[in-house]
Amino acid sequence: MMQDTKVGMFWCIEGKVVGEAVILSEAEPYGDALQHGGHYDFWDELKPETDVERRLKSHAYDYYPRGRVVYFKSRQHFRLYVDGCLNTGNREAIVAFFGLEGVQLENERDEHYQCARCNKGYLE
Image (tube, rainbow, N blue to C red; front, side, top):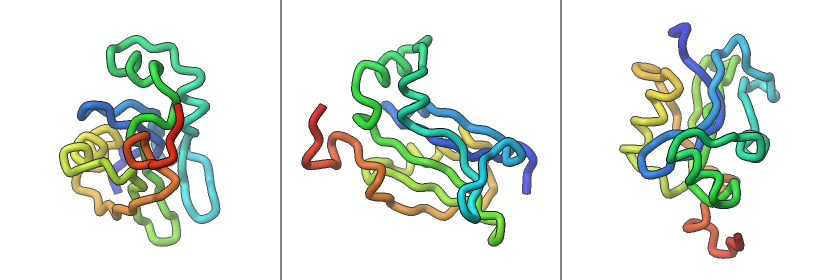
């Protein structure tokens, strides 16, 4: 496994990834998985510096498509949990953000990650 692979959480806004990633040695254990960060905490503490960060902060933390990359120690395997709105182009940006080029990455749609467009009951 490459040393610069990371785990963490993210949003995709117009093809750009915003989020927080750490190398595996800095990740927090969660059952058999290694992960990092929380969407709400990151969003709440974010002091926007870029246009895409300002867009993120202009809505509720769960407005834009989001997800998480985790690593399962026992299987030595990365998993990408994603919102249903994320497509192949987003996946490439996510892979680059987390340094996962050439790494086997399992995709899993997760109902926990529903943006305003996917969540029919969404209220901002």
